[in-house]
Amino acid sequence: MRKSAEFSQIKTNPDPFEAFNLSQAISIGDLIFVSGQAALDLEGNIIGSGDFDAQAEAAFKNLGMVLEAGGSDLSKVLKVTIFMTDISNFPKVVALRKKYFTQPYPADSIVEVSALALPELEFEIEAIATK
Image (tube, rainbow, N blue to C red; front, side, top):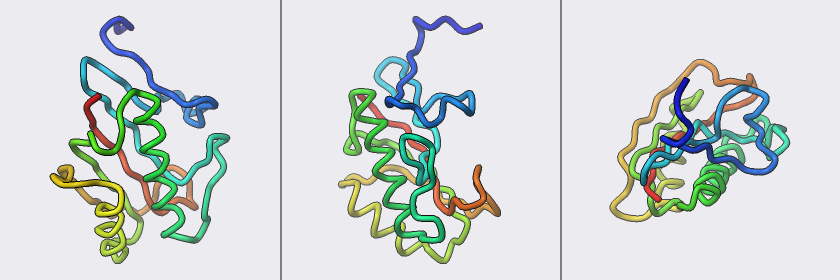
C-alpha cells in the first residue's frame, strides 16, 4: 500500500467520484493530477444531456473547481487530455481552450472515443497542474 505522506487526495464536498472508488485529484509535491472531469454536478447528476456545449462548459468549470480545492487554478494547468465522442466538435474545444486558458496554453491531446463512463456523456477533460 502507498504511504499517504507521499501524496494527498483532493476532493470537493460532496465528492461525486467517491462511489466509483477513485480520486478527483491527487497532489504530490507541487503537482496536481486531476481525473477526467465531465458534466456532472456535485451529486453526480449529468448536466446538459444531449448538449455538447453545456457538457463541455460544465467539465471545464468542474476542472477549475477541483484545481481550486487543491490550491491551484486553471492558469497553472500544464497538460490536458480531452476525450470527445464526436471529433467534429473540435472547433468548439479550440474556443473553450481560449476562454478558460491563457498563453502559454497547456500541452494538449484530444482523442475521439466511442463512449465515456456514462452513456450520456460527450466530453471529458483531465489535467496536470502545478500548485
